[in-house]
Picture 1 (cartoon, helix red, strand yellow):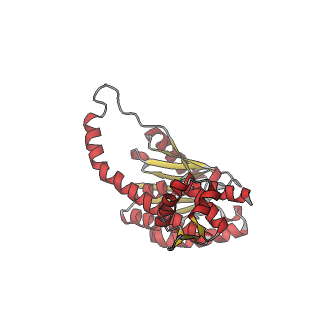
Picture 2 (tube, helix red, strand yellow):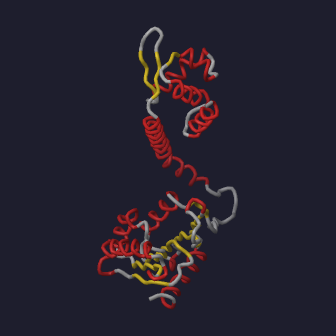
Picture 3 (cartoon, one colour):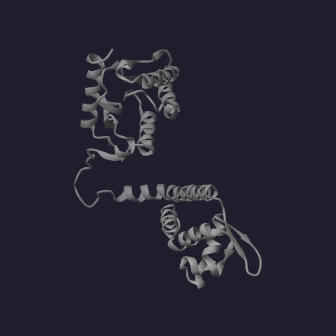
Length: 276
């Protein structure tokens, strides 16, 4: 059982608790309702620190205190503890974002006033930036859809994420952006995936309306989007890798004019000559 308690302590540390907090809570979950002195002995947290640690855990909403002499401490259910940790992390992230946003204008003002003033070098655009596939790449995709002014080319397997980008696509449609969507041919997908693609396609047509430009290709070697490739623009792309889960993949983001134009030109050639 000690091995499971140690594993639980390690997991709680990864979920945001410090060493003393994680050890105390892990042993409290194991022991159930108990006194602070018992927790100190079981967890290895010094007696001089245990009351402060228990107070910290109480303020985080991770345990129940029954006043008395001595006070008794009880754990919440595992699901309740997990919910409380998630909620606390979200609040902490919001506070961190607020602080950063408060400093942003001042940073840009001061940094702009000294930017490259000491040298004669020119600003160079980075070639690519690697991001993880998942929430990060989806956030980048949504920003690109919203930033589109003239053209938006989307290369996708089945538009599985239509619900997440619906509002961003609607914004692009409202600005009169020329949107082209290149998808995998249904007969190149499994019957289950083809069925899902059909539902996503219906939702996509609803967003794009009468101006929908959608084509199919036997293969979609590169997935992602290219925005305004003729006038600078941006692009996000990843190589199609059948069978490789998303958490093992990486995507590339670029605003380099040459790379963006090349990607846009490549997808336009595929649109004209390798799709129907």
